[in-house]
Image (cartoon, rainbow, N blue to C red):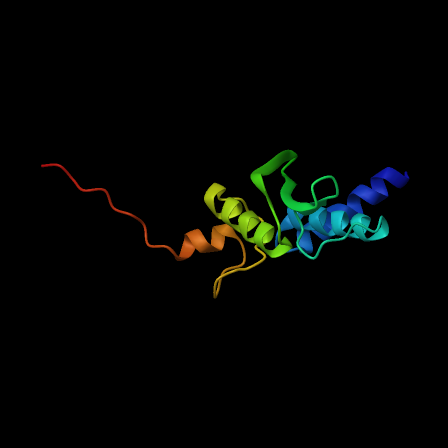
Length: 120
């Protein structure tokens, strides 16, 4: 029925998206936020009306992630998002990637492997 058709469409979009299901979920969330008038230019960054500050909160593989603290500037919250994603090795797009970096896994691939000293 309709549900199977929708699932097949989502699966094909996930297969075509460079970040797979995570990328499709982010795009879907952005679309919903735009419709509700609560869009931010940085996915995972939210404005808190009660405090007048920005916070970082997002879902990744059905697990909610929150970065401690609140930020006066939206861009500062986006940088905190990037630091969290890199530190936890999440496959999620970065807002301020370094040259040649797309997500945290591409940053790890560029780093040389650390070698442990051998005892003898």
